[in-house]
Length: 121
Image 1: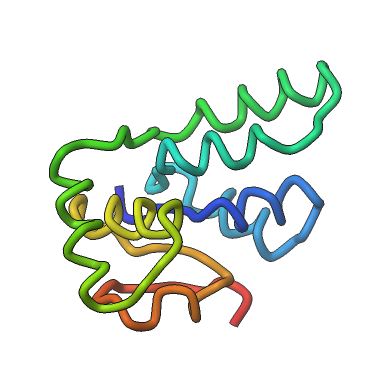
Image 2: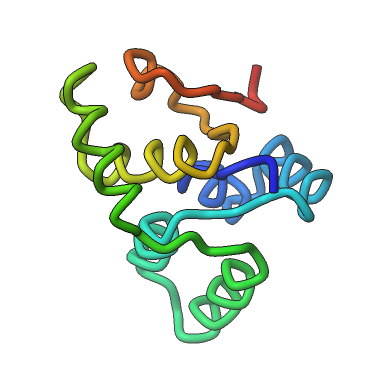
């Protein structure tokens, strides 16, 4: 694994945004998602059929559970910047697992010492 993909990249893909889709397709084997991303994406109002398809898509990626190490990293990250808990757990998951966080919302993570990639730039 090389990348941890943020929820917004998955959502852009589901909305047929070519840049997001291309990134996912080209890097499929190197992508993980946080359990938080799994929850956030599946919280959207899908039809039953769409929900089934989206769940199948998400389960094709390695899903990183929230561990004690990730929790401790999230606590440490709060010293750098007050950050939303969901974003902090996603960032901490990338940090603990030495992954590049792929997101379009790089500004949300600028005060945290993490490697970021924005496929839209």
